[in-house]
Image (cartoon, rainbow over all chains, first blue to last red; front, side, top):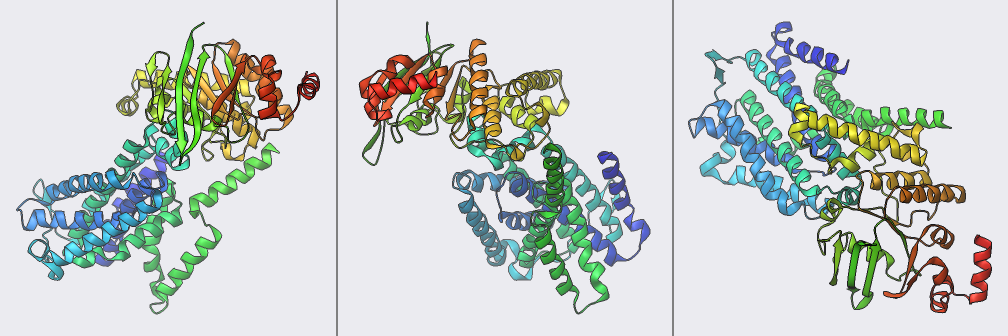
Length: 313
Length: 265
């Protein structure tokens, strides 16, 4: 049932370029897909494992730059660029995660935030590599098997295939025993240790996988934009991922997916009122948080629990 | 009889205060041993040091012939020592079944590759854990909560879940930290019966507890700690008539204690 719904939704999304020729709407579709993947990756480390990581922004930026530089500076193709983005981010995550995860959860938040800011500085100031504030424009759209994904409509398929593959992978991970163990670590780490499970390898792997997926998503998104500059590390992206996870319900796989799609489309749906659109968007977010402080999925869960309590009485 | 857990000359101090001073214990396989003492006598420190949740200053801990001294908690658990905690620890947002499944997970041979490919090894491990879990849930009388989030259970029921989780992987010894503190009297009786039954089936327990009646009814041997030192050791009866224990722990005279014992029985 769930699988059928997911499959139908995926196919419906695949059909978007067939239904409209508007590059603008297709662009929103690409953003929705990629932001949902990045949010699902944040959900893995924050929602499931309980570690709030602001480093996602850094991974996103590194992913974008690595993919762009692979193509422009190092003469590779786009696909290798995305792969390198994932690999390099995984290694970076292991390097910063190993010492940082030994500290407590609060220190982890601060250190990941510092890392994200550091990446922003590097993007701006290491001019020899990143071309600084000028950025790298005119990123060429990729091709595969002789087919060139030249238009936005064609590139949409790349983003779509990437997103479906990543979300399927993350779903398999989250619904496995590994995912269950991550939830257990979030809820009660001493108990996990008392049951013979070492938390560190789990936390570190979750962080590295989250980083790799975020980095690859950044790479795919850069080639949609066609340019990368330090604005790619704007806090707007981190904020978007975080809002999606919190509104959807941290720790709920499907809640975050639904929120990712809905919240990416919402500001566009509000375009009927150009002046007040972002204000209305903000009000909707605030009200949602008041009514459902644990997100949509959390709210549904609370209701289900209340029913159970009633039955047990 | 042979000792399954040997603790020799355990020492631990915090900022110059001796929390444990030369404590040695030997727990025999198939026994129930009580560890009692007034607040601050070092009971919790002792089991934290044994189970790897605190570093010990010196001493030696041997479990079934393996030296586990100073190893991290998860190694000690894998070696066969499972414990519960004074403030009840369970996964409150997971159902009873998942709580028990996680407790056994590290002890089966199935890896994530087995799980991904759904190999026979994986299916067998899951089935085996499920059988064990159902058995224990039957024993603790929480069958109807099988698929329900454990967060909605009462405090006493949560203690039972923690106990069942500790028993999941057939450990060599189970260390219970105040299993009945804060639990209502009828349920205390149920826990007592369940532990006695498990013990008859061969489980070994080390129990830290304040409830004297509970310890008296259940334990084959009782060890008394006071100010980080072992004050006395013997059967519950011997302990009750030991004047040092009465003074340090119960704060009463032998006559008063005798009256208490008659009341308890």
